[in-house]
Image (cartoon, rainbow, N blue to C red; front, side, top):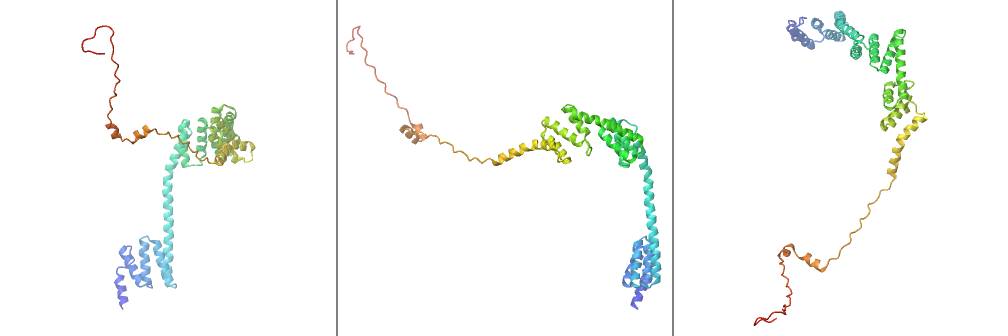
Length: 335
């Protein structure tokens, strides 16, 4: 009797509307009467109206667990799941629409970057090409345009790598193949300078021509090491030799070059480690001078006493009286 009274008290508020008060009332009453199918269905309706589809499906699924044979709960659960799937489909389309609405802006920027990449001066074109490739990394026109700008700027090795990438995307494009052959020829000229010119020009050419994995990579690395070693840059020379050694560990020339720069240091370290520690040599004692009695007496006199000593006058020896042979003597004077 009391429980029925409670149900009637809640029935006014739990009416299946989407208000928060109605949902809260249904949840409280259903917690007290979990087997009440009408309350559970009203709560599910309120949750669906408030677009809480996952919560509605969960509420109905819990009711079927308690009352697995209840057909009303099964029908309502099927309806809730259908609405849930429909809303998911609508949300997916909305997201696709938003993405499509922003696509024209990206396409407009891409067209602008492509135009600038293929028409401006090399330095400015290179910047535009990079901006366009940030939007479309595999855009063939931008890749070729960037390679063209690099070639015009004298960066033939980087241009060659760009043409290679373009050729991998469009292997049958004859214009790309022509540019690729031209870049290969230009790089070979740089390689020749690396191997033949004087130190300064050759070193810059080697740095420009070096391509990791290229058949002439080891040859260029060794040449770099030789040039750096000749100019006294031994640390950089050793780094170049070690790179070449990693590519071909069995090359005797490379191993000898590495040894020539590492063995002197190792030998010096071994000599330093093997040298016995030298004990400090005793210093010869200075000869002690014997003190004279006068010095001993003087040393015993305190400074204050020495200051009080008054020098005594020295008695002068009187000369003998002089005799005067000529002239008479005065009376009373005897010599």
